[in-house]
Image (tube, rainbow, N blue to C red; front, top):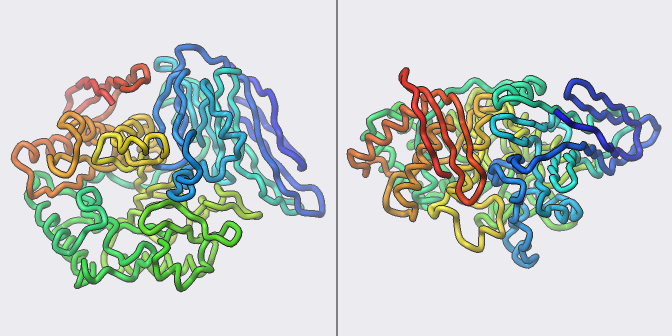
Length: 537
C-alpha cells in the first residue's frame, strides 16, 4: 500500500511511535509529577486516490448510514439542520454531531468523507483497509480526503487527563491491502477479537406492527400465529411498550399487561421458543419515575441532564459509571432472567458515552459499559443496538448493523436532510450489505426485520422482497414483525425459502458503482448448487 506518514500531533506529553509492516502505534506517557490534559492525537498520511475508487467509512453507531460512495459523493445529512429544530428534536445527539468539533464538521466538503473505526478504498475487488486496533482507549475518527490525497486519524480524547506515570495508547492503526476476506481477517487478528459463540436465529419481534401500542392480547395473538409457520422459529421477542415509562423496567404497564409479562414469557417458553425482551439500560425518559426519584443518576452538561433524542417524552442519559445505576441495571436484568428471558435486546446503548470524563474518553466509557452488560447478562444472549460498533466487538452475540427499517422506503422527506440515524429501509439494507464483513468476525449481524404483509406499510412488493433477501443472505438474525397467523400459503412458502437462504454460503459479492441505486451481484452456494443473484439496493 502506497502510504506515507506526513504528520502526527499529540501535544504536551512524551510520545513514542512504532511503524512497521502496516501497523502504526502512538503511545503517550506523562513523565511529570503533575496531571497533563490531552488536546489531540492526530496522524495524517499521504495516499494516492484514483478516480475509480469506491469509498466506505463506518458510521458512528449501529444506525448511522454507512454505504459505499463514489469519489464525488459525500454525506449531506446534518449539514443544514436549523439549530432550533436540533435543540428540540436532538437530531445530532444520535450520531457524532453532538460532540464532533466544529472544524471537523466544517471540513466535510466534496471529496472529503468521514467515519469511525474503519474505512476502505475499493478498486474492483482490491481493498485498501484503514482501521483502528484500539477503540477501547477512545473512538478514532477517520477522514479520507481525495482532494488533497490524505487519510487522517484523530483520537477522540480531548480533555482526557494523564496522571503522572500513566501510559495511554493514542493511536493503534493497521493498513491492509488485498482481497475482502484477507484484509478483514488481518484486522480482526490484530485486534485479537473473537465473536461470542452464537448460531443464526429466526424469530419474531413485536416492534414494527404496533410499535409501543402492544398489549397482552396482541402479544398472545402473534404468539399463536407462530404455530402456522412451516418452519419453527427460534425466538419470540417482546419489544418496547410493556413498561410504564422507558427506564422504569420493574414497573409494567398494567393497562396493557394486567397480568404482567411473566405469564407471557412462561407461555413463550412453553411453546418451545427462546424468550427475548427489550431494554434500553442507559436511557430513561423525562416522564419516568427513575428520573423523578433519582436525578443524580444521570449525565449532566452544566446544570441540564444530557438529552439523547426526542424518543418517547424525551430520552435522558444515565451515568454508567454510577454504582447505583449499575446496581439498578443489574437488578432489572436479573428480574427478567428469573422469569426465563434468555435474550436481551439492549438498545440506545450510545447513551452511555454522551459525555467524557477527565479520567475516561467516550470510547473508554463505552467499552467499560459493554463489559458491564456482558457481566450482568452472563449466559443470556445479547442483541446490541444503537451502539458504536467496535465497543461491541466480541462482547455481544448479535448486533444491529443498520438503522431501523421504515414502513416507508426512505422515511419522510424532511428527515432525509436532518437525521443520519433515521429509520430507513433503503439505509438499513445498504448497511446490511456494506457492513457484511463483521458477521461472524465481530458478532452475528442483525439487519433488522423483513415484512411480507400488505397492510400498515407503503413498501412495494419488490422492495419487501429485496429487503427480505438481503436480510437472509447477509444477516444472521432473520426477524419478522408480521402477524404470521395472517400469512397465506404463498407467504408461508416465501418464509420457508428465506430460512433456507439464511444457510447459504456467500462465495463472492461484486458491488457496482455507487449511486441513487447500486447493483450488487452475489454468488452463493446452497444445497450443493451455486447460484448468482442480482440485487438493486
